[in-house]
Image (cartoon, rainbow, N blue to C red; front, side, top):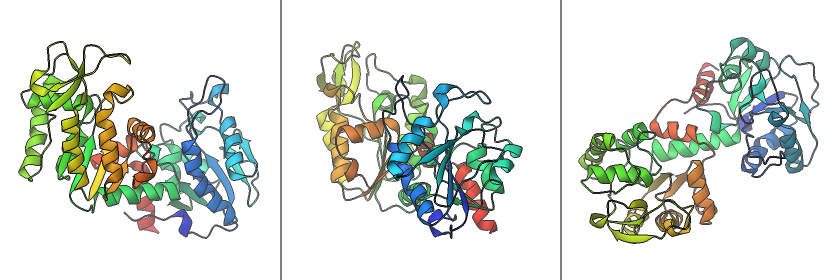
Length: 395
């Protein structure tokens, strides 16, 4: 992929508008409870400030009603935290689309919640042109929104004098391209989650790219059914066993496999206090819930991961939030951490597992994207990246 990078451009004396992803969780009092996304955005902002630019930053927060900004939608808490991380004041600017505000060189201002602007979600052309007129350089540093064609992620990039990727966006594209377009082999993909239907197209796309496909969670239950196993009252989608069989055959034709768990961790109820029972797959009872893979199966998967050249991980293999059903995910996490492979992990549940088992610094690259990460895995063109490529080709 070819695109301009913020870090390669002359920025002194320029007005730079950075679309960041500062959509962080807050408590009922509006206090930020987890600031990873804000901290991840700091590098691009600092680079532009140090280069002598006048820096404007905007982001969405939550799901505001366009044209009706409520107190809970404001980026004011974000401005405060950003100011602390940057070590300089960050002024919050309201009603910014039509301009009329000044930004000094070396200064950073935060432009209020972009999704409160009428036309943002629909990628309104007139809105995009107005925003593009505010800057000399537009930088998209919000990979988590790259799968959406909105005014601040796509439209503005069409009309800004210069459109480029910020360092976080560039790093995401580089890491995902390395993992999927020219991977060190064997390429192993781990895909977990509740339902096959939500990740069916991703599984089908990955089946043509990977050497080994590991499935977990509710997805694995559907594959267990496809292999002729009983799953008790576990979450599954029986109507998709045919699709699961097709995916198994695609991998098999390439000499790989989709390993089906030989042992499982079951319970009679889904709760934090449920008693875990490990049993062979053939012994699953009609009233059992499968909530994790068993230790034998986990060791087999860990062995596959240890031989990988590249690992892509999205989704836990069990209900790791309950410790008694976290053994499989812990084993997978430790295997990825110990592997010499280039590894990339993405998705909210995956990152929660990575944090829980203390392996964050052992993963080659942590993706900040959720839906964007999945769509990239699927091989879809992401609108926000596609427009940056188009602008680079035309320059």
